[in-house]
Length: 130
Image 1 (cartoon, rainbow, N blue to C red):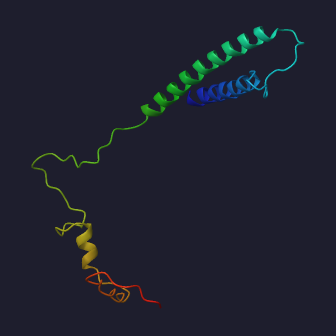
Image 2 (cartoon, helix red, strand yellow; image 1 turned 90 degrees about the vertical axis):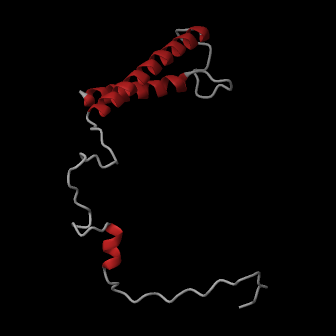
C-alpha cells in the first residue's frame, strides 16, 4: 500500500516540477514562448495554473497520507522509567547500587594520567613572546 502511494507521489512531484517550469515567468525564462501553437497565451497560462493547483493539492494529500501511514507503525515510547510503585528495580550497574558513572570511576585507568595543566594566573598579565 505504502509503495503504491510513494510511486503516485513521485509521479505527482515530477509532473508538478514540469508544470512549474513550463509556466511563463516575468522574464520569459523556461516558459512557453512564441505566439504560435494550438492555444493562446491566456489559455496556456490558465491551463498550467489550474494543473499546478491540482498537482499541488495532490502533493499535499499524498504527503499527509504517507506521514499518517508512517505514524501507524510507530509505538509510543517514554524516556521516563515507568515502573509500578513497590516493584523492585535493578540498577544499570548490575545490582551493585551504583550507576554507570560509578562503575566507570571504579575501573582502573589503563594509561598513565596526563600531566596537570599549569595554574591559571591570578590577575591580568602582560603578553610574553615565546
